Image (cartoon, rainbow, N blue to C red; front, top):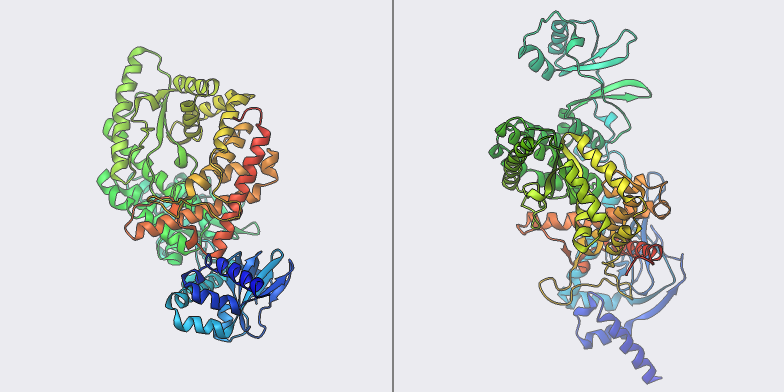
Length: 640
C-alpha cells in the first residue's frame, strides 16, 4: 500500500509541475500539496458549484476534462458564459477567499476529474509563496471581474451616459427627432432662413405626396449657392442631394458610420415603422463617443498635400484602440479601418492626378492581399496594381506608360510617407509588371491558371483577391468576369490552391495543447497569422473561386456561399466565429505592441491568454483542421 501511495503522489507531483502556479514550487512543497489532495469525478453536465450558493471550502484543479463558468443574467434570466476551463485550470478561488456566495455556475462540459485542495493548505501556500499569491490575484480576480463586466455589457443594448457606444447603441436612440422638412417648391432663400432660424444643418425636401425626396445641407448652401451665386428665388429642389439614404432606427450606429464614410455624406435619414423618425449627423456620433471615424475621414478629405495627410494618417491607430475598448467584433473593426484607409489612399491618388494632370486613358487602381479582402488592421505593406484601357495605337501605349509610371511612383512614395511601407515582394503598381493594360492582365490570369507553377500559384492567391479602389471600376469588373470564366472546370489549378490551403496545419498537439516554437527569437510563441489566419483565408478563398464568388473579404465570401457550397453551408457560423476570434486576438496583440512602442508582429504567447481565449482559439484551430481534412478528401486525387 505504501509503494502504491507513493506512486500516486509521484504522479500527482508530475502533474502539478506542469500547472501554474504550482510549477513554481519546489519538490518538497509539491509533495506536501499532493498529500493534501483528493480526487473527485463529475459526469458530463454536472453542476459542480451553483450561483448564489454558500461559499466553498476547497480549490479544485482540473486533472482531466473541462468546465463552463457561467452566470444567470438578472435582467432576463439568460445564461452568460464567462469562461471555459480545461486541464490544469482551477476554479472557486474567488469565493473561497472572499467567503461571499458563489458568483457563477460551474458545469462540466465532459466527464471531468478534479484534484481538490482544502482551504487550510491553500492559505499556507498563499502566505509563504509570493509568486503563488500573485498568480491567483491576477488570473482569478482581475481577469474574472473584467470578463463578467464585459460579457454582461455585451448582452445589454444600452448603457448609461458616456457608456453608450457605437456597437451597442441603436441609431434611433441618438438621432435628432426634430426633422424639419419643406415642400419641393420652397425657394432656396426660404429654406436657408428656416435652417438659420431653427439652428439646424439640413432640411428634408418633400414631394407633393409628402414623401422625402432629397436633402439640402449647410454644405450645399455654401458650395452650390454662395460659391456659385445662383438665383436664391430658385426652387430648393434644384440644389438638393438625392437619392436619399434612409436607415432603420433599429440599426446599430457603427453600420451607419460605415455608410456615411463609404458614400462621403454627413446626414442620413432615420425611419421607424415606415415613417420618418429623425436625422443623424456626424455631430451626433461625436456627442455619443467623444470622437468619430467620420471626423478622421473629413480631415483626410480636407487635406490638399501629402504633408497634410501625414499627421492625419497617424491618428488611424487611435481609432483601433477606441474600437477595441468598445468591445467591437474584429469584422467591424476591419470594416471601419478599411474604409478610412480607402479614403486615405484615394486622396493620395487624387493628389497624384492633380500633380500630373488628366490621365491619357481610363484606369483602375486595384488593391490586393489583405487590403483587397478588406482585412487590414494597422497599416500594412502596400499591395496594389494598376489596370488601364487597352491602347489603340503605339503612341497611346507610350503615353500611358510614361504617365502611369510617374503616377504610380508618386502614389507609392506618398503612401510610404503616410506610414504604408513598400511591399517586400514589390507587388505594387510602381513595378512595371503590375501596371498593365486589360489584355495583359487577362493573359497573366490565363497563364497562372493553365500553368500553375509555384510562383504562379503565389501570384494567384495575391492577385485574385483584387478589389477596385479608384478609377474606372468597369475595368476591374471585366477582369473579374474573365477570371471566373477561366476558373470553370480548372480542377488542376484548384488542386494547387487546395494544396496551399492544407500546407499549414494549426498548431494543436495530440494532447490538445498549443504547439509553439521550441527555441530562437520566438521561443514559446506561435505565429497566429501563418498558423491560424492564413489557412482559414486560403480555405475560404478556394471555395469562393470554385463557385465564382465576386466578393473578396473572408466574411463576405462565407456569407455569399451559405447556400452555394455544401462545405460552407454546414460550417458557415463556425467559420465566421473562427475568423472573428483569430483576427481579434491578432488585433489586440498588435495594438498592445504598438502602444508600448514595439513593432507589431503576429507572434503570441498562448500561455498568456485567458482560459476563454485559449478555449476559443483551440476550437477555431480544430475547425481549420477539420476543414483541411475535408479538402484533402475532396481533392485527394490532386493533392500531393
